[in-house]
Length: 144
Image (cartoon, rainbow, N blue to C red; front, side, top):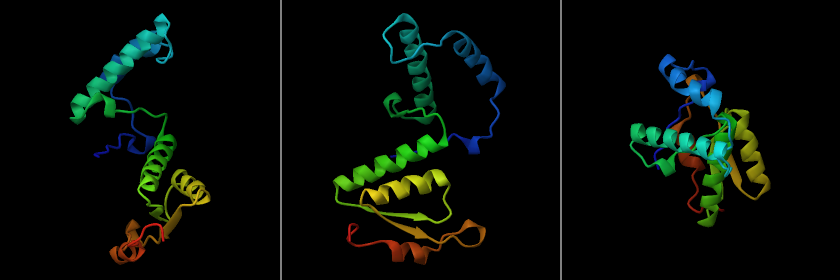
């Protein structure tokens, strides 16, 4: 599965042409896209249109596009989804680093309480993880 990170460390200014495209929607389309009333259906239309546009740019299907409220939500969602998928296959060992953002560390701590094992690798100069550390952390039987 291909993943694309579009947050740019939460500091990117909105491009003028994007803002111009968004303003009518932000100003007038305030319905909940999950609602069945007129404003909700209108919001759903624009949300689906945005998915289609993103899918075209990213060369994927619209159903593969998900929008989150920010990095923490995206981190939690991605890690929990991957962990639960792995657990179905008997894989409950996760490898990460000690230098992760708290959004990652907190979800890993929660997964440990659910029975997952997490190996936290050291991070060295310039943010480098040593290949040997990764090799040593990989378990032949992930749940052992």
